[in-house]
Length: 165
Image: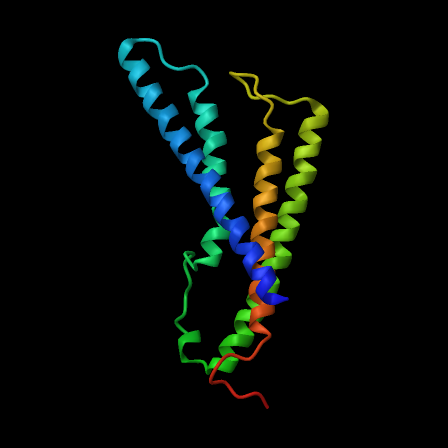
């Protein structure tokens, strides 16, 4: 079962990361377009808003993929001296706590997105409805929570070369 969940999380992480790459290209294009139009004398209205929306996607979409590839910063000053078994249990605890945290972040993102949708809020300059971006950030946090949950399940299994008492 863990193998199947791992495969699902990897596939989802890759897809979200691909969309994050597209968002990064879009963000770069908007920023370049804005710089060019400023030189010509008529700046691109709403560029700041769009860069903010795309920036949120660039950060949120690759979260799960980065966790799968261990691309996040890890401080191991103490843990590098732990036994394999102790390290496995510390990682299990960390994965579980982070899973709960990111489920809560996803939930609160959904609550916030629903509230701004009901109020009919839009961005200031372009009047873009932005609650879908907030929902998407929440979904990305939910994917990260799923990847962390799979990490937790993997930590529960003894690793090769490790004795269980």
